[in-house]
Length: 178
Image (cartoon, rainbow, N blue to C red; front, side, top):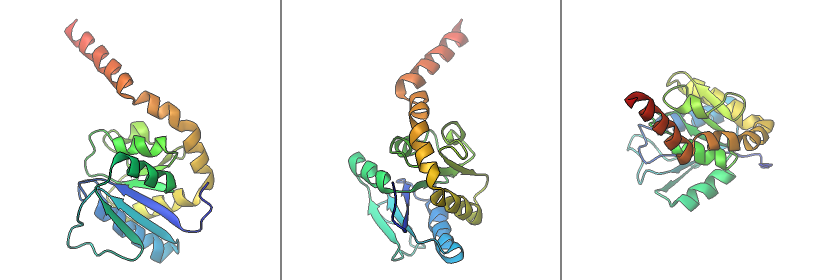
């Protein structure tokens, strides 16, 4: 499982700024410069990066991709970075976990329901580039975390399947009208 010295960090999101893509680029840069980790960043989603983001040799910008390609990239990644400024549900998080890939996200929105600190990823509290770089660094260097993610992914995915969500919503609606 992931024996290459290069660590691949994936970012998936059409809304680059809202999903925290700018933070991810800066955190990976910091990870490379300050921590000496040979990290590559694969960006899927936006057709074009904002003009203030300079594409570096260690970045691959793939634009919008079909689900099958997203899954292929996630399977090869060491971590998904998704420090969203707003995240309604987090489908990319579930896709990553289903691929056995840990996630670094924010302790906000639905993320804490899916990301379990030290079990399948890590969470940051703020929009700090340094905190994100530290979290990404600890996750990509924790080889056992990938195995724990694979082992625990089925439970998280089952809890957040469309059927499970529909059952919870139905229960809430029934309680509120009775």
